[in-house]
Image (cartoon, rainbow, N blue to C red; front, side, top):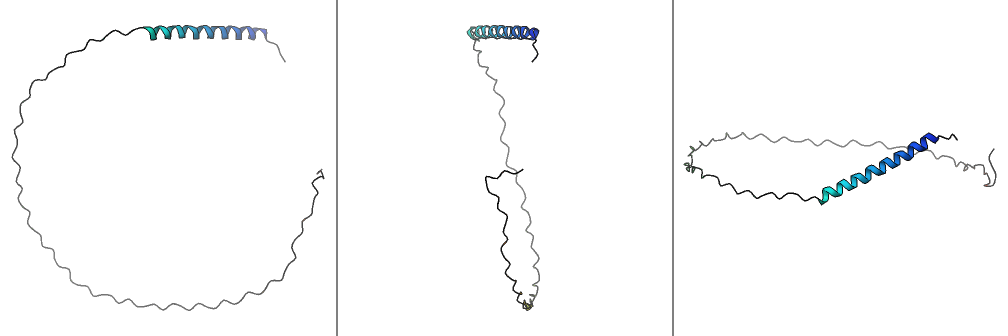
Length: 116
């Protein structure tokens, strides 16, 4: 493994600089937290001048709409639905019986045998 003495010194300087920056930030943050904010005086509430009153308007009267008479629809004759006879299903012939085949046997490999 290669030895880089320059990098170890650079790493040490980097760690030292980083720790100093962190400590300075902590001190600055404590100063910000300890500083008291100036008191803001309460401003008087503004009173708006009274606006003019809006007069009430009369309710509009709408003319009544004429009633529309719907035309009566003529009665339609009821349609007679013809019964469609169900078709007869053909008989399915019986399938021929298959012969009984012997069950297959698989080769057995003992557990202790190593494969090469």
